[in-house]
Amino acid sequence: MKTQLMKKTLVALTLAGLGLIASGAQANDNRNYDDRYEHRVGRDHDDRRGNEQLRQSQRFVQQVDARQHRQIDRIRDGRESGELTRNEFRELMHEQRHIRSMKENFLADGILDPREFRRLDRAQDIAGREIRAEKHDQQARNTHGRSAWYN
Image (cartoon, rainbow, N blue to C red; front, side, top):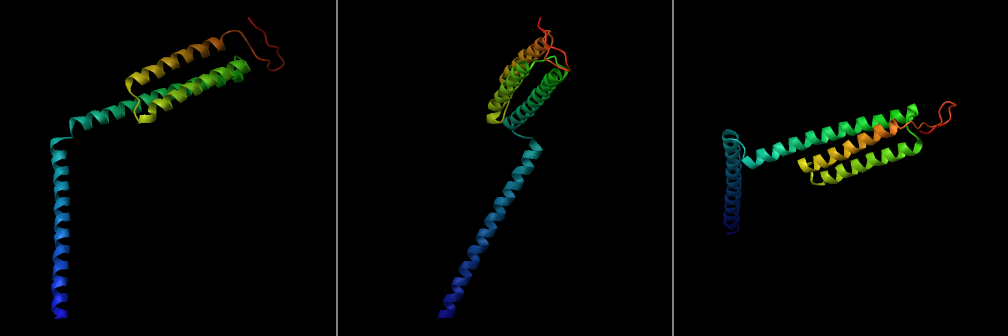
């Protein structure tokens, strides 16, 4: 009697296991079919728009980063050449930190949209003009034995 009960239990467990395996295989087959169908038909319009938005955001970030690196290089060159005083250097670097902070805040959602890019671009325009103005304002720091003179 015990052996017959054990056989029935074993058969029931085996059938249940086969049922789980079959349903898993069917789910996997449906997923593969969906992947093949999506590949054949093309991605959903929202996916394409999302991917394009992500690529555009990456281009915006690269432009902002490259421009910021150039501006920081200009500021450091001005400090080393004596065209910028210590205070001018500090103020210009503070402005660059502010721009970087703006960019990080805009990227909190993972995307830099065109409106945010325009705001960063405008801030970098202003910073670029200020760098030029400070480097060419005829103020020099005390370098190599020369005294500072002011316009």
